[in-house]
Image (cartoon, rainbow, N blue to C red):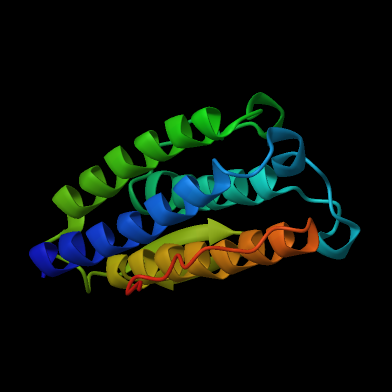
Length: 157
């Protein structure tokens, strides 16, 4: 199962690379523009949010490793965002190394005053589908800024 998830994550990183390549064609000022229709978030802040969700669910929750969160104000360019995702990729490798043979073992965590029980497979699925949700939002944001979004799906033409 570990190999399957690693291969699946490689598909995720391919789609992410397509998004990042597209975002590099967007003016940096536009990447940082807060959009009222997205709760005054910017394209870069959306991508940072996703990286932080990986950090929370993989490191903090599943591996009980409390690393510092990525800071929105520190990310001023796609190079900054890419550095965050290099750390995300390392976390995925650590996570799969730790849980790759135990994906259905329950993990329990106190969250918002309630005990939450999931499995490593649920956590992995949650963070990757969460990334795709926000990837769509980033593309929509770029459209609102006057750009024509690129194809960033796992299967691209």
